[in-house]
Length: 165
Image 1: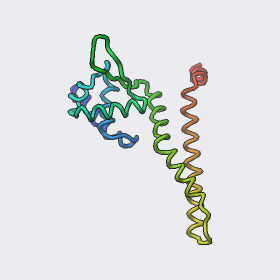
Image 2 (image 1 turned 180 degrees about the vertical axis):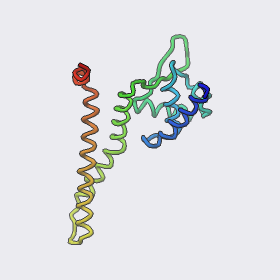
Image 3 (image 1 turned 135 degrees about the vertical axis):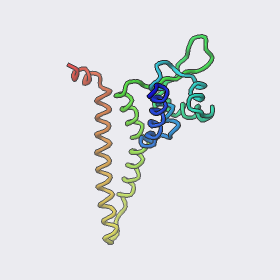
Image 4 (image 1 turned 90 degrees about the vertical axis):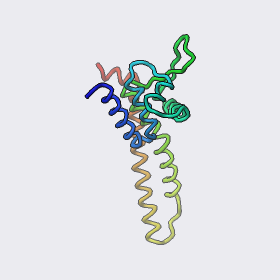
C-alpha cells in the first residue's frame, strides 16, 4: 500500500469512527488529517485534501477547536491560518472524555434526576418506572464520577510523575 493510499484510508476510517465519539464524519476526517500531518495545515489544504467547502471546513475546525483537540497556529509572513491537532493520545482521550461528559452524560443525568423525582402514584408501573430510572441515574452518575476521577488523575502532574518513578 502506498503512503497516499494508506493516509486516505486512515482519514476515511477515522471519519467513520467519528460518529461513535460524538462528532460528524467531516469533523473526524479533518481531525485525522491534522493528527497525522507533521506540519500545521492551512484551511485551503484541508479543503483540497478532503474535497470540502470553505464553510464546511471553517465550521468543523471551529468545533474541533471548541473541543480543545485542534489548535490554530500562525506563521510569520503568512496571512493564512494554519491548524494542528493534539498529538498526545493520552491528552486527546482526556479531552474527548471531558467533552462527551459535558455534552452527553451531564444532560442525561439532569433528565434522569428530573424523572426520578416524580411521586409515583399507586400503580405498579409508576413505581417500577421510578425504581428503574433511579437505578439508571445511580449507574450513570457512578460512571461519570469514575470518568472525572480518571481525567483528574491525568491532569494531576504529581500523580503522573510519581507513576513514572
